Length: 60
Picture 1 (tube, rainbow, N blue to C red):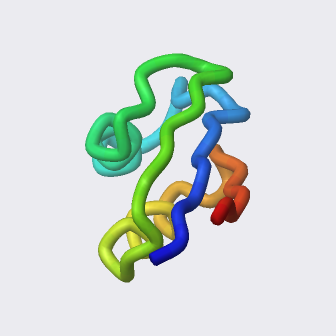
Picture 2 (cartoon, one colour):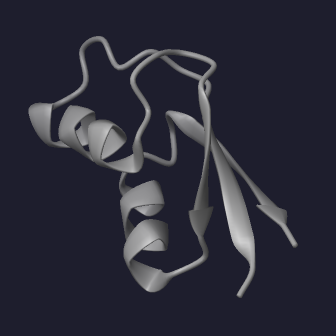
């Protein structure tokens, strides 16, 4: 299964609480942080919720 790299590129200031919780659930706590996740539908759903705050890159 492929993996994805998720990087927080925008601040979570003035975001709704649900989006802040989604970032924490993804493992993102600060700006510029990068985390690696399995490419699953649950992770992609969370990334879709905060797509304006993160960048996604697929790895092998």
